[in-house]
Amino acid sequence: MAKLLETFPCVPSTERGRGILISGDPKSDSILYCNGRSVFIRSLRQPQDVQVYGEHGYAVTVARYSPNGEWIASADVSGTVRVWGTDNGFVLKNEFRVLAGRIDDLQWSFDGLRIVASGDGKGKSLVRSFAWDSGNTMGDFDGHSRRVLSCTFKPTRPFRIATCGEDFLVNFYDGPPFKFHSSHREHSNFVNCIRYSPDGTKFITVSSDKKGMIYDGKTGDKIGELASEDGHKGSIYAVSWSPDSKRVLTVSADKSAKVWEVAEDGTVGSVIKTLTFMESGGAEDMLVGCLWQNDHLIIVSLGGTMSLYSADDMDKPPLLFSGHIKNVTSLAILGTDQKTILSCSYDGLIVKWLQGVGYCCKLQMKDNTKIKRLAATESGLFLTGFDNKVWRIPLTGNEFGAAEHVDIGHQPLDISIAVDSPEPTTLVSFDSGVALLNGLSILNKIDLGFAVAASVISPDGREAIVGGQDGKLHIYSVSEDNSLKEEAVLEKHRGALTVIRYFPDLTMFASGDANREAVVWDRETKQVKLNNMLFHTARINCLAWSPNNRMVATGSIDTCVIVYEVDKPASSRITARNAHLGGVNAVGFVDECTVASSGEDAAVRLWQIEPQ
Image (cartoon, rainbow, N blue to C red; front, top):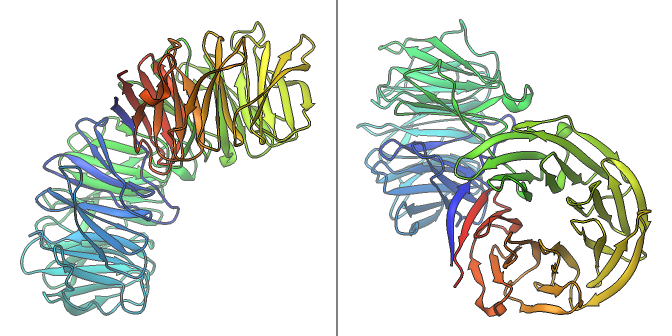
């Protein structure tokens, strides 16, 4: 049996020049955000308490709790809204095709019976309000000519809806059935976000023209604006009201968040606190999302980092939630400290996690270098990308050193380190051969004469195994002059090799292929030790051995992690189904009974394996 222990979740997906939407449930003190096709439910009281909903067929853009907290409505780029329960396995209540294009915002009415959604579409179909249970349309929403970026429902009677978008307009509708009431054009650029105050007396808009406008909640008339003094110097992407309707939180491309005191009559808003976000020093520090929930202030940077401030003490350093935005391609478990996990995503972000704690620190490769593989020792990391380079990064505690690289002249495919050899040797494979490195010095580059697909070097550095596109395993001895001598060729696989890994005590090794099969081999006799490992339904991407030499784990693009016990038939496997939406890219054993996995959903998960 495989039991999920922990999830180290990804952070919200972001887009430069656009705000993002995060929402929450004040009752449970949890928040919702989206990444890829998944909706993440994360507790602010226990940040490691994470649930994931992954039933959308397209990238999800927004998700919101119903007023009673029992339902969640989520929308995606296809214009589909799904309404599903927060309990009992996220049971689906309804699914509606609301718009012809991407949905950018969605809001519930205060009684939980109606939903309004806005975004992109055809003709006038840019905003739609409908009944949450039947999908019946409730009115017409004329007045916008371009994409509607945000919408808001008045939280008290009489019902009102306000919208804003790329046509610089703020439109006001009354109903139901809803119909056009008035339109305002005070902004001179995209109006990015619109929100009603919790008491329903006012609503506010923020725009890329660096301004914020305040309107009467019942009539829709403009009554004031945010003061320009100490105001934002860049586009304002998002706004959120305090629970008492007296203050608002805004975030901007100028890398700052500001808390404003709004006059009771709404005529003016004055800055009372500025929160500056500085992490990388680059564009990733721009702030694109915010939420004021209970006594928490949450701001989100373009790089995805979420900063959690206390509304009662804004001078207190924030609690940071960070992680990956893109798919995680590789994992490494540090040898002497089995509680430390390193993960690397395609966009060049390396994150260090601690079991039982979560996020520790991260490093973003310069120039957004794309990373394919990661290998690690206690002293540093070796990485390969898509630019013919092998990178080395020193690691000291929680500090990453300066990255150095060497160009091997070919795009690397696989990388492994002989960690137990006197002078650790690194084996890097490319399409037609392999290269042996000591640090960043190329010892030898060898053309093997066949199409290479995967490789590994033994921990003692005396042997290397190279797998070909033809499914054959070539075993080489490594001489003192760093040349390779072929000792054997093994044939069992029916597809291109994708991964090869040595047993910790070197008595066996395992291999996996693109034809969904894994094989455990006896190293001395070169015979198959465990076969019929054919329980994946698609290509095997990764493989790892347990420290106690008893189990081997495989991960596949079929979304499953399968663990086999070497001394039992393959049919007695242990399977973690739907481990990662989109496929599993990397696995590794944290200890004898805990497996770490990562995949296309940009998350890292820990599984407890209980042998049958």
